[in-house]
Image 1 (tube, rainbow, N blue to C red):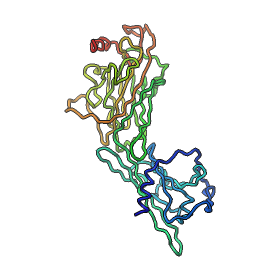
Image 2 (image 1 turned 120 degrees about the vertical axis):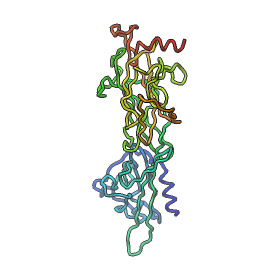
Image 3 (image 1 turned 135 degrees about the horizontal axis):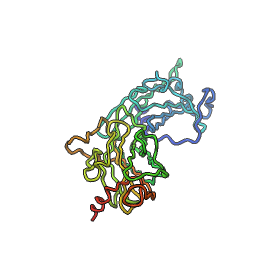
Image 4 (image 1 turned 90 degrees about the vertical axis):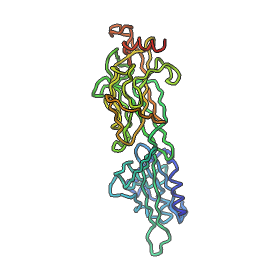
Length: 356
């Protein structure tokens, strides 16, 4: 019991970032000098890191050998897949045995538990004593756990040049991160990315893509619950704010969004897609577009063409924003002499009236 308690406490530690990591290929390149290590009746402390959709486990090769544990027989619950086998590394001069376990319920014997707030991936590392005529060590097992909350309180506030914002989401508990990316395109194939040099005009259609590339698409879905804009460099929490969607399902807002925003895909995959008419907020050369994002552990797609009851808004969401600058273009057809990303002349009078 003391062995298991010590291992469980150690597994909650963050694996520090090492400057130099080299593969032991062949393993003879990581031959231990056991005179530098003291023997112990318990195995050394493993460390675990949960990031980028992978559970990484490191355990000291030389300390295992000095303490009479078998380094060639370490195993996760399912080691038949080559991706789940151990590898040997030199990490800052310290020889380590490592496992790189993909965070999927179908890999390496992983099990998945999902409750109202978290997704929990679990596995077990088996550590076996060396077999001699006289056995002086007990076998040991270490419970491995990566915990991912289903909602994330994060904020990304950057000026977009090019138009692509990204942030790592810090997950409470055992370390875990998921990357959120917001990108804008000029074509419906989502291949021509908008940059600071892209010239856009009033009423032109652009395409918005918000994706969590590391999300397990077999189990979770990303959902944009709100799109909104502010004029100039105004912060969304302090200045004028215009909702392009209403409610918490990402459907077009009756006042501004109808005819402006179209939902292409939302709540049924690892990315959400929208199309939008370019518009302008009068007397401002900058418009910031924001998206509030959450994750659900089942299909959460909403049919915006059907009326439904009120849906609840998650307590914690990730907020992304992009910002673009107007370019002078008197031939754009706009009533003003400038055109820019997020410009729609038909909105100008409505926006002025809202704050009169």
